[in-house]
Image (cartoon, rainbow, N blue to C red; front, side):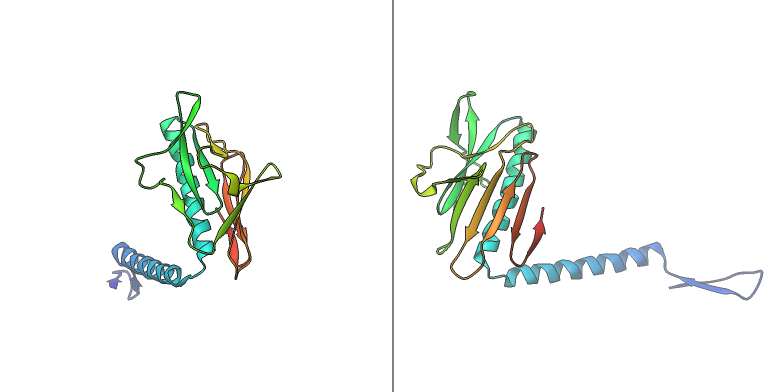
Length: 177
């Protein structure tokens, strides 16, 4: 802390310097980060973890589609998902060589169901070669609702709208964007 005496009187002013304030803000930020990290490490709700991971992957894929100017899509089966890329303007091919957007399998005990435009898609019949949800280079997305459930918890719903926004809904989950 600094103290300054004014010449015109015996008033002493005390205050914090900018550097001291920045150090305090940095310490608070680090402590908050550690607290959030420790809370997320203790979360043992696998459906929530899978839903949050998928929401972030969809957001990332949508941004990547816009930046690269190419259309991407997402295909689901009952126990997982995979990203696709439009090649030659007519053929959807599995996205290969992208470590982040690689195919994923759900942990044991989790199941998903997919609704497109109010119609439930039969995922057990899906042959993993055709996508169902399209992420366009323009930033638009085919609206969908995906439900992730396990035996012990209320289902979580992941919703995507035409504007490319993805939100997570369900018991114990604040609306995440």
